[in-house]
Structures are given as C-alpha cells and as structure tokens.
Image (cartoon, helix red, strand yellow):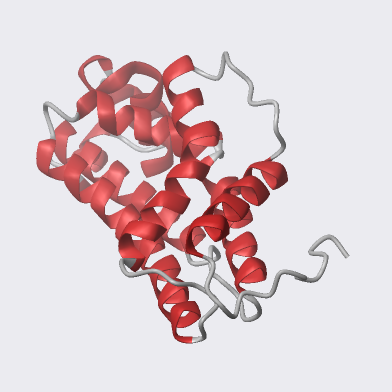
Amino acid sequence: MLLEARRHFMAHGYASTRVEPIARDAGISTATLYTFFPSKAELFHAVIDDASNEFARQMDHVRAVDGPARCQLTRFAEAYTAFMSDPLVRSVFRLVMAERPRFQTMATHFFERGKARIGATLVDAIVALNAKGELACDKPAWAAGQLMGMLEHPVFFVPLVTGDAVQVRRSHAQIAADAVETFLARYGGPNLDPAAPDLEG
C-alpha cells in the first residue's frame, strides 16, 4: 500500500494525488485505506517515514572499514556515492523538497535523520583515524561534511537540479577517489601511509 502511495505521490505530487486510485492499485478498498490512514496527509507522512526507514537500512551498509585511512575513506566514499546517486533517493528528496512548505516539520526530520545516520559513521571513523595519527583534524564533524559534500555535489545535487539532463563524466569510483585524495591532502596526519594498497586488487 505504501509503495503504491509513494509511486502516486512521486508521479503527481501531493496536491494532485487522489486516495481512491492508490487504494485501487494497492488492491484494497478506499474505506480500508482510510482505516489505516484517516487522511491523505497522514498517508503522505507514512510514505515519507517508510522511505526514510528504507534509506536508513541502506545507510547501514555505508560503513567505514578497518584499515589505513585511505582504504577506510575510499570504501565509505564509494558506498555513499552509490547511495546518493540512486534515482529513487533523488526522487524521494525531490518530493520532500516540493512539499516542504506544506510539511515543514516532516521535511526537516527527513533531512536531519538521513544526515545524522550516515554522518555519524564517518565522524566516528575520522575520530579513530585522528587517534592513530593518520588524520589531523580539529573538527571531525566539519571534515565529514566536507568529504560528503564533495561526493554529493556531482552525483546528487547536479542531477537533482538538472533532472538528470547533465551526466557526470567521471565514474563513481573516480569521484570517490578524487574526493578522498582532496580530503587527505587537507587532513592527512603524520602517520598517513602514502603507499596504500591497490583497492582494485
């Protein structure tokens, strides 16, 4: 039912979406749908909460791994790039952004939950790498935001604005590698291993 509702809201927007076609496509009566969600607004909230939960499960796989700084950050960057470039992720973000004036609190919660869930993983990794002397970073949260921003811009924000009309020329692996090298050039510590193993091997 929620997947059908998501499809309708993404296709038509909140204002133009009707509950009756959602119920029909979900194979239930309109009365049954209203039993679970007494209003279209409550159904919309449930759709966004469900998408947020789905994204949280995906984000659980975006984890830094043990190993040298370059290895940990590259694995994180590649996973985060793959997640943020998912067309479904962009579609849900577009929907939330479009309906933000009507559902301000919901939109804020959606954005903050996603950022905190995935950002905390990276911040923890940066703190641990600081302790090992592989990074030298006074403000791990700021540094995490900078790395994530370098990844988000080409694979998420550009397509979000252009509607996928502008294709990024670099591969996801190259975007991740470039971002990590830029990050390490700024925050590399005295114990950073310059001869990291080949991640493709």
